[in-house]
Length: 148
Image 1 (cartoon, rainbow, N blue to C red):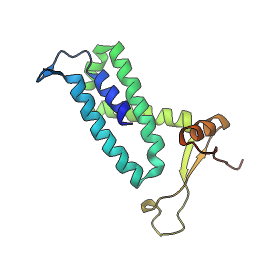
Image 2 (image 1 turned 180 degrees about the vertical axis):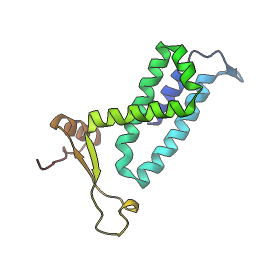
Image 3 (image 1 turned 120 degrees about the vertical axis):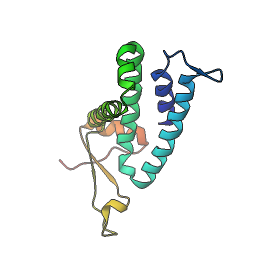
Image 4 (image 1 turned 90 degrees about the vertical axis):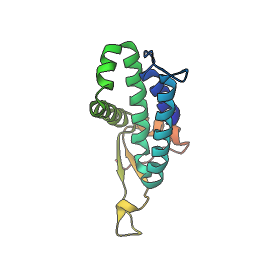
């Protein structure tokens, strides 16, 4: 995810003519994106492991948006100047990608503690056969079996 964030950060500002200490601003932005997203990904995956599917999808959404900005710089400049709108577009795109690839993701209720939100639990993926095979391919595990 950090690598995708780095590439997206570089592409977001690729058309810029700004240099800081002789380094193009796109490389600096990519490094900052990679650091922040990498740390956030580790924390979120440790605390809420079932959110990793969404984080992967948001990383791909950010990369797709960066490629779009590279093709349409005028739209990119306007959207990059509004961080709230940029975040909404990236997260909405990530939700769409996650839904398309992974199907619906649910958490099983915890039986160990009374606070399921604070415990780790297995992820149950409800989706088509090709979606479960895709998730299994990413994880290196057998496809998730879901009762019909």
